[in-house]
Length: 82
Image (cartoon, rainbow, N blue to C red; front, side, top):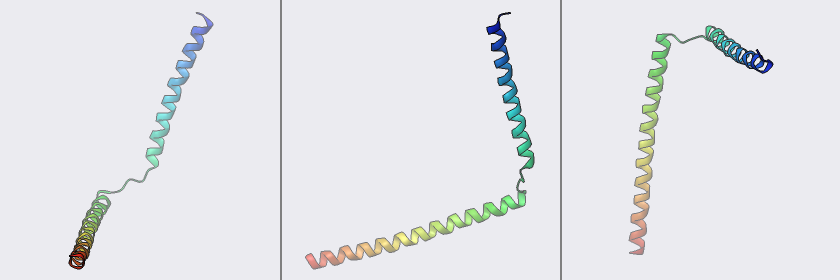
């Protein structure tokens, strides 16, 4: 077996070992994670949905107010300029 072939196989073995080590590290880190419980997830989801709904209503009301103000300004300008 030539030296080049041995070096190539050694490099491939090192790559495989690095991948396995990386995946083992990921597995160990995932064991350290504190996952939320179903109740916490449900509560957080409800809060996010309610907040999104309320912000949407706020933006809608703001849009109506701005539209009304701009329409009023446009009517005033038309009344002044004829």
